[in-house]
Amino acid sequence: MAKTTILPFGNSPLMFYNGTMGLRGIKPKGKVQIVWSPEFAYAIGLITSDGNLSSTGRHIIFVSKDKEQITNFLHCLKIAVKVGKTFSGASGVWVHRVQFGDVLFYRYLLSIGLSPAKSKTLGALQIPNRYFFDFLRGVFDGDGSTYSYWDKRWKSSFMFYLCFVSASKVFTDWLRSKIKKFVGAEGHISKDGKGSTFQLKYVKTESLKIFKKMYRSKKAVCLSRKRLKIQKTLGIVDQSL
Image (cartoon, rainbow, N blue to C red; front, side, top):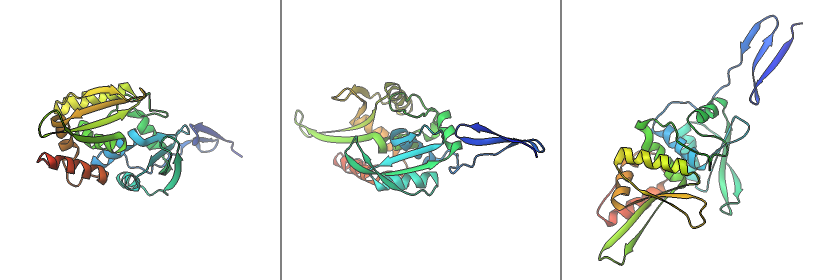
């Protein structure tokens, strides 16, 4: 009887040798269709902010307190996965969680610059220019925020800011350079009160330029509560998305 030897690739047996049949390949099947589109880029943005590549070499994990965020994520990747819940020690609340295995997609994420335990090591990513602001919208829905207030120093002066947060200085610098390249907005980077994360902020006119790009399509997939907050803010200064 011919001897069969399993040759492991990561955690999956992808190749085997059969003495009578020769070398054969068992191709891994991918759940995710790797084709760039506004939806795919948005999902990559979500993974960049709130996703995790496990150490298994095949599993992708995504968590969010917003059920809509989970629904959008699965819709954009065109996959059906059971949604569970897990307790977040960082925020002290229960959050929604999905996990799925896809060796091909996992490897692709590695190839564009993502990695396991990426929070502080994240750097520049390979995102097609055409889809950068769809990607940025995903990053914003994951780790971004907006806030506004009336500046008492000036009469009728309403201020609003757009902010992106990351534990990686390299990623923050890269994000800033890309935004400057596409819309000319400078922004500024500061550390939070604890000094653990970097905050990339844009004020008023600059943030408006970015909002217009991120939400250039009324059909763009997004977290509705964040979009609604931006619309209300812009309404105060007679602007709209």
